[in-house]
Length: 437
Image: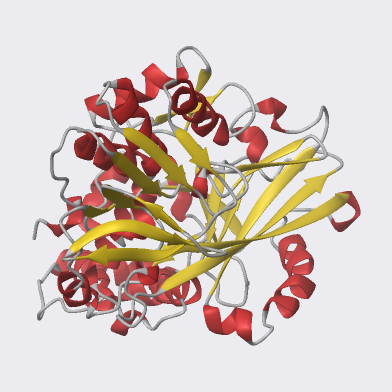
């Protein structure tokens, strides 16, 4: 296709699409516009005093053979293979996730007995119209009240009764990651605990720097093949004429003309009155002067509502040289809403974070060398109960295609974004995996 293709957003989805269009020699001009100062989007890496921090536990894992081939074609030999080691913090103890029988030791007897009763009853109940309905139907009321309700309310800022079931479909699948691990019901989770041969999941991770190294390689290929990547320029909307997009409006004024546009920036910029809502992530990248033996996981979930954070990541358990010799680090994720930001709620979070981390044994205050705070905007779309109708009513012009997590309003992982971009580069459609029901 001749003409100019503009891709808004230089995250994994946008860079994959740009790289494929140019590598296939389509003859079109490809321009990528990115609001941040460097490519990578939600897969950026921050180097702070020789400590590498990703935005949460980014890593590559896929059951899609096409995505797997693409990952290896970009990385070449510049990756390592690491076994999964994730945890959940419950009742004062770090427990392996997905749960095993040994992980259940010390959990409240009433919750375990109640969950066993939920599993044995296994009745479908009423209609599934909310996140809460979905979890209660699949995992029982006891596990919902014990973990899912508080964690989801803290993470999303919404009452689970007001959230669409798709949030559970996507969220639980994203947490499990490996499709060989069956966790689509309390019964299947229990069978998985009893399995004589547990599933061992492995990931790819770049052998240098952090996860942004993957995006840096993509960016180099895009530029080498004649594409342009314009950073530090936010896209604010589109300009249309006769039902077709003819360009994008950019921060600071001006229009970048285009024959077609792939939009991976927040869809709320295109439809500001439609009610699309995102939550943001405040990350605390903490450098530690010595190793903390309790942090023997790659990432861990925290469901307790009295803790301000929902997940922590230990970079050295992805690759040893992400920290200086003998040092340690931890990346802490706190999801915040627009209301929290506007009301100054982040100051209380910053005051309480280190004492809370010390309470759960994640660090010792005397070991802290620095705390590097980063606000990462629009990290997760929020699925209220009307979000599908909202998406259905937001029909873009034929030469504008919504792409990636923020543009598609899709709670996905990197492999899903890559799969979507590969399909679009071939002129094909790409369906969301949890929209099949």
